[in-house]
Image (cartoon, rainbow, N blue to C red; front, side):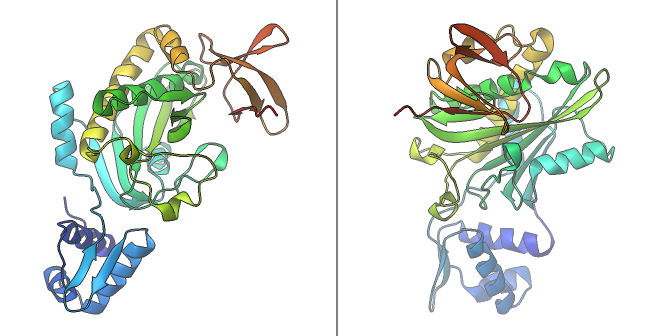
Length: 333
């Protein structure tokens, strides 16, 4: 795949450096038909994105570490091996947010098919839940969105984040043998540290068709410069696996989502609740549930049949549902 314009030149430079050898500014300029000054400007921009490029006089530029880049055709080859089908998939170098882009297409009534996937090398305005920023350095992590149309209305979408969390579990287990834990409503933990997050956004009617944009961010090779902005313990795939193929991960994640969403459409959470509860990151722990204005404390019992979080409080069991709710482990001193 080739891209035009400044972003395309940046990506072309990065691909040239990704071969692991020194490349002169003159060679890069001639191959792209731009000046050496323009090459230098692109290199500086890539460095500002968190990519570790150094220069040696007389030799040129070199990457300190290779940057895994997405390849659309490779993703589809892996996906076809899993499903027997091709997938509508789009790879973009730099975007504000993959979720925002798909939601714009929905709201502007642009052509979009259920199951369409958008992935990016970098997000300039990546978002998490409750308005938080999702750190999105270039090429370091996975920035992924999946569009799904649900014809049963908004109410039917209430437990989708549970199905999505299990899909992430399925993909990471199949590829890396990792046993992750799930934190309600939409975080994925490994060894008590955050590995991935889910952001499900909806647009539609209470009774009519509902459009869902399912965003997933997975830490792959988080650079220290970006990690300084994260306000909680985190981990990445590279810390637990020596084999990191981004294309294969996108394919496995997409296939797992296809399977879990098809299951959800047929039987809701009926077949998923018990498995989710075995993976509950806070099982049996004292937790605090907060909406900003109110707080509830109790022992985390898992989820109920609708996907709500179940707390045991003073001997009574009560479920809480969706919205802008935050769940964290209570520190007992």
